[in-house]
Image 1 (cartoon, rainbow, N blue to C red):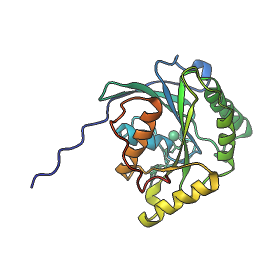
Image 2 (tube, protein in one colour):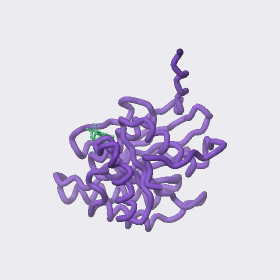
Image 3 (cartoon, rainbow, N blue to C red):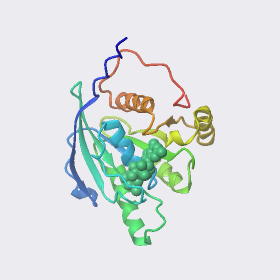
Image 4 (tube, rainbow, N blue to C red):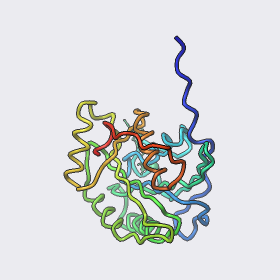
Length: 224
Ligand SMILES: Nc1nc2c(ncn2[C@@H]2O[C@H](COP(=O)(O)OP(=O)(O)OP(=O)(O)O)[C@@H](O)[C@H]2O)c(=O)[nH]1
Ligand SMILES: [Mg+2]
């Protein structure tokens, strides 16, 4: 019996288009923007590479604090939609000086509060650590994010490194996070392709792009 045909790629082009350590130095927005936020080492850059099906487009590192600037990536889907993925520098890295941390806070706050094209924030937490003090600060900041001209800015909470929890405990861990925080969670792992599909669907739904005819049933990688 022949194996099923491989799924065609979702993304046909993904390019780095610029980065900056100051919001006003970023290239002017060309498309709707999806920003990825979370503690250092939570897996932001790895998640972006996994979604974009590119191994090394976004720089990753096992050393926390790798991403120090805001980086923009223009994405083109097979169905012709274009939008921008934004890698934000991670917070909560203890080895930074106070002034460096203040600079980073200013950069992230400036981007989230002012960037007109921002449409969705994907907020990441390590499934094994849950939400910590720094994440609460992000949560508070997200509550202050003003609606943009097009629509309110959406927030998706994602628990990363789901592969580190045994299969049988994943749903339980996501439900526990839901109970703690009062909002739903998606699970994600670079190692679990089915979680990439689920996150893609949520991202595209928020952007109102590449919509499928019918929404699939919720599954084991979400707390819904
Ligand atoms: N097992 C496992 N490891 C992961 C996963 N995602 C990321 N990692 C690892 O976690 C480490 C940090 O990943 P990055 O993607 O660089 O994290 P980041 O959030 O971008 O970190 P900063 O740039 O420092 O803010 C790397 O060693 C990755 O290989 C995952 O889903 N599963
Ligand atoms: Mg990074």
